[in-house]
Every structure is written in structure tokens, then in C-alpha cells.
Amino acid sequence: MPRIVAPTDDSLAQAADVLRGGGVVAFPTETVYGLGADTFNTSAIARVYALKGRPADNPLIAHVRGVDDARTLVQSWDDRCDKLAGRFWPGPLTLVLHRASKVPAAAAAGLDTIAVRCPSHPVARQLLERFAAPISAPSANRSGCVSPTQARHVADDFSSIADAADLMILDGGDSEVGIESTVVDLTSARPRILRPGSIGVEQLEEILGTMESPRMESQTISPGTSPLHYAPRTPVELVDTMELKQRMAEPANTSGPLAVLCFSPPFVKPPHKPVGMPRRADQYARRLYDALRRADGFGCSRILIELPPADNALWRAVHDRLRRAAGG
Ligand code: TXA
Ligand code: MG
Image 1 (cartoon, rainbow, N blue to C red):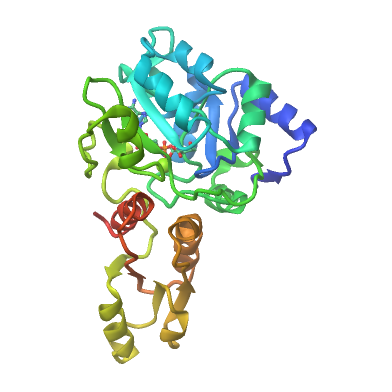
Image 2: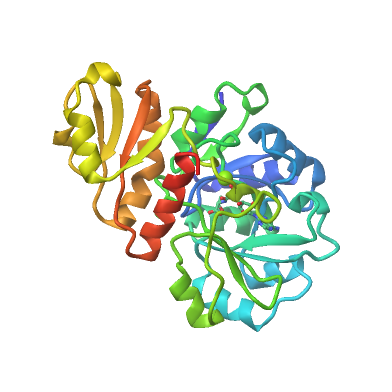
């Protein structure tokens, strides 16, 4: 069984040793938990792909202590990078840049670019300080599943994976942001959002000027942004409040029990099963993946999700994840 451990001086030193030995460690970040390996160790990187069951063409994000580390991974670090890092690092912003030739291609799924991010979670920072080098890490879920925002989620996903029997999971509590970082492509003169996140286009445009709007990307540009990427096993349907009320008024024998993520749980009567969601965007984002995992665990035929508003950047990023959970 994977081991959930409290982040102490001892366990952090142990985790850094595991990374040095070419092993894999799960650790908390402010967005979601990551499954980390030494960026410069190709067999350690291969182990991450195998454990996750991740397609070989989906590149990883290299996590760094700060700008100095980031510079060592990329061909050129320009003024835009300095400004973005100055404003948003440490934090949930990932920059895609041209990969430095000394960085193994395997750390970026063979692409000539690399994604870099400096996380703000104190445990991630302490681990990076102790390891003193970049840590490549995808979200610490099995490929195609919902990202983990608690140590327990990681343990659940890997409990039946033989090769994860000795996986160490540093427990950093609930991830505060709750959805994955904003990914920005800076490899051309026209920066582009590849994956929306809590740092929105308006904030980025203050630094970068007008950007191309985010959209569902194709596999080749940013593989992890393909539809059906953050999906529970149970089929998901997005409904507005009116439609939800109608569905709840129908006799349950037409649908069987439904799991329902909604703002007013008392609307949902047995045999349907409610999961109450907060009305504030930041709280909603923080709760979302745990709620999807819980709803998945009910074993219902479907998960209905009451659509939240879409009137700010965070809600729009939440909508992006909801659409993906529903299959695009
Ligand atoms: O918040 C996060 O970003 C979390 C935490 C652990 O840092 N990580 C995460 O990693 O979400 P992952 O592997 O689940 O998603 C990384 C995303 C994918 O959509 C991937 O395709 C994209 O970043 N990506 C990584 N490297 C890229 C590159 N060189 N070019 C384009 N997209 C890239
Ligand atoms: Mg992921």
C-alpha cells in the first residue's frame, strides 16, 4: 500500500533521497498533488509514466525553486517570463518555453519545449529545496482520472497498483486552489493559454497584452488538454438549475438513483444522492475534485452537475474542468 506520511524534517529528507535514487514521490501543491521524479533522470521519468499509465506523448511540468532553476531548463528566458514569474511565482502558473538541450527529451515527452512552474505550497517548496533540483511531476492521479487534492485521493488511486506498493505520499492537507495551474505557451511572439486555471486571461493580459483566447486544444499541442481528461468513471451530465429541478421531479424509476452536485442539497430527495457545493468560486474549485470522487463512489448511473455561473476567470476554469468531466 502507498504510505501517507506527515511532512517532517525526516520524511522530507527521505523523500529527497528517494528522488536522488531515481524513485518517485507524491507531494502536495497548492493546485493538486503531483507525482514527482528527477527531471534529469530518464528512468525515473519513465517510472512516472508507467505508474500513472500516462500516454507517452503527454509531457510533464518541471517544478522549480524559482527563476534561477527555470532558466537552466529553457533556451531563453525573456522579459515576459521575468514579469510573469515576478507577479505569479510561486503560484499556479505554468510557462511553456523552448527546452534547453541538456534537459532530457524524455522530461518533455520528446517535445522541444518544456513546461515550468514554481509551486507555492510550503511542502512542495521544502521538497524542492532539499532536492535542490527540478522535479518533473504530473498530477498524481491515474491517467484520465480526476486529479487528487488530498493525500487520501492519491492513496486511493494507487492502492491497487503493484509498482506503487512503496509509494510515499507527503500529506500537505487539502490543496488550496483545487484545480490545475494555468498553462501559458510562450514559445511564439503571441502567447496563448493552453489550459485555463485560477490565474485568468485578464491578469495575464496586464503583462502580456492581448492573448488568444483559450479553447479545447488538440492532442498534439497540449495532450493533457484533450476532452475527457478529468473524468470520473460515472457518466457526467451538466444541467442548469431549471433542468435540475425538472429532473428531480421525475419519478426515480426512469433514471435510477443519480448523484447530484448542486448548490441546494435539500432539493435532492432519496433515492438520489446530493453533494452540496459552495457558491463561491474559490471554495467550489477547492471542493470540486473531492466532490467528483465522492459522487463517483456512490455507484449511481449518472452524476448530474448543476452549472455554476461563468462570470469570472476562476468560474470559467471550473467550467472547463466540468466540460471535460462530462466528456467535452
Ligand atoms: O497544477 C498543475 O499544473 C499540476 C501540479 C502537480 O503542478 N500538474 C499538472 O500536471 O496538472 P499534468 O501533467 O496533469 O498536466 C500538465 C499539462 C498537460 O495538459 C500537458 O499536456 C501540459 O501541461 N504540458 C506539459 N508540458 C507541455 C509542453 N511542453 N507543451 C505543451 N503543453 C505541455
Ligand atoms: Mg493531470
